[in-house]
Image (cartoon, rainbow, N blue to C red; front, side, top):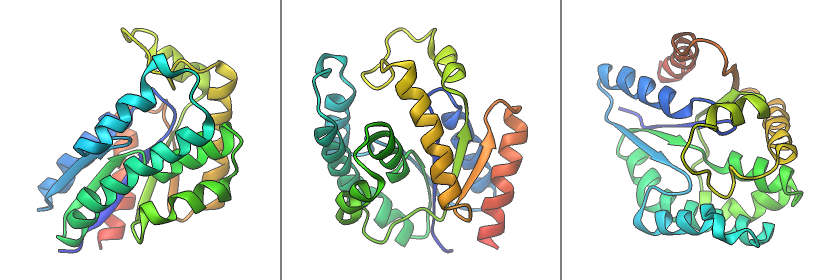
Length: 206
């Protein structure tokens, strides 16, 4: 069985976790062993880096530091988890991957798309996603969905202007790579979103 690497992208509150779980169940029904992971995180080292990146106490963190920390966490995840799982024929579904860095650090932070790709090339190696699903949601709607959360992390606490740049950045990225990135309206019913995702994934598997 051929391995496949799938990523879920979009602003905070877009429903990525729900769709990952629904897709995982469908793939398992078809006989796939599924591995769910997240960024930053997914390994002991990467989770430790996640703690630094998302800690609200580190508001003074510079964009360049942020970019390099995300890339470091990604390198560990790819080499320790994603790469071996894909090579073993598993279906890997990740909550975020390099597209997040392109959008958050490259576009919203202003470091530049090509700079982000250059920094992340050693971290990614050959493992770009086979399919990416962008759950498109306005910044205001995303913030509204997170408002009942007990504590927002450092990235979630950013300004509305920043989150609007993120939302717009994702749309720009999807326009650059429409074959890999499928944009889906995140306000649609979760069952409709799930059917759209399964349609693309199962066509790839065929």
